[in-house]
Length: 580
Image (cartoon, rainbow, N blue to C red; front, side, top):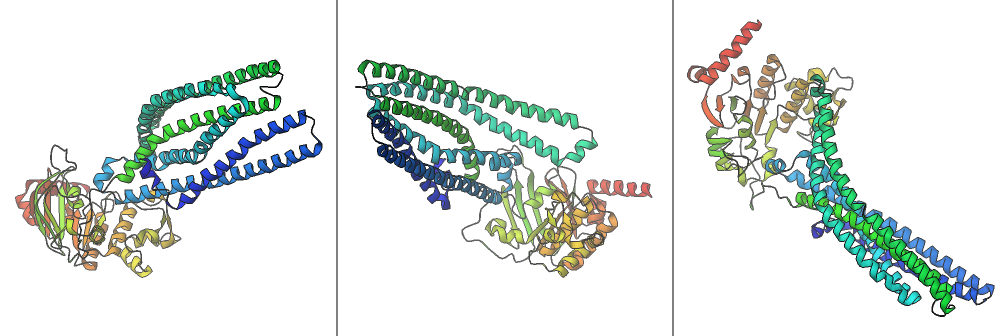
């Protein structure tokens, strides 16, 4: 884990190395200062001249300034290195997430990914900052002060050899007890974030069903759960402070009492006032260093679990990868399913799709009809290789999709979903997701074909109208039409419309289908729909049921031969007649 995280330091190696060096110089200055002060005290006691005091004073001022300068520089380099590591971690994690297949995404929840990119990275950043500065400073300070304490206090410094193991045992016990708690609490953090995400995303539904109180209770329960675990961990970690205080005051009492006794009984021969003052200073340094080390241990304990969660994302390899010698050109939009079966995971008990044999010619319009859970969307997700088939083969343009370069394949397959996603930005910026080099004229033409131009022209800013996050300031039908225009700009060899006109009226739906037939006649068009009218004019209509192809044919053929299709057709026409 440490090696993997260290690879993200990269361009911040120099500042990461400079920080411990500067800290070491700062520690040397701080540890030498009490020694010089002790010497000054002894000289004053011996009745030295003012010039000697001034000389010592100048040396002390110089060393204090150097210590301050080294400390300030260490703080700057430490901040640069730790913030840089956090930036690189987030960048590397985000880039790896972009490579994930749907199978990888299914493995990690959205809320968990958000927690790992934010809270976990912050924990690692804080731990790294402490490691390269405090974790270097404290042991060095401890060693220097320990040596100087022996030099100044002799046998009296053995008290530290008794205190150090007590503290070490306490820290080890605290770490052992808190690690499992932190491991559990991060999983609960994920659930807490999931509750927030679902509530904000579904705010309209929550208010429509007056479920605010229920959501408050659900969030409160999740927050309470996190609070309990953190409280339990913090109670254990709180042992650090009284343990440190006990050791600190025990040492201070011993040094003060035994030191005073030694000075009085030996008349300053074994220990003089200057040595005694320096010993007190070094005692304080040693104990403060031990206290700071305990804080570092706490942070490292917390960050260790965060680091493991980050490395899980960094080391996760996409279940889909390019072949060694990929095909970069998609010849046409023909699609061939040959004995295809598919399940979402290796451990799944049954297939989502079974025994699919389907051959679609380039340029054909294919309609897909089926009930909820009939695997209509699953079928088309295999075409752009969002998942790999479990059995059989799927060919596009006569080539197995597993032999294509992923980007090349997906650039030739445009998908318009029922739950369309628009991003924060202008209408133009959203449309250029389909073609980043599209001209204004091309965008206007695509919007005319998708019937989006009529509402865009009513906006004061027209194509420069700003779309709020998630398309909150446009209706469902408007979002669908903008997403269709975005797909048309791509000019793909295969266009998949997954119930993407469900929010528009039948007249607009018919106009969109007519425009597509005229604008992209050579593109293979796959239309998944609930309305028979949306697929009625397709070259071939596929009826899905239970993850299998129940029937195939034209509208007239299926009305005569397939009960599922006929019942749906009669039901929808009856509803239409009733409306009239």
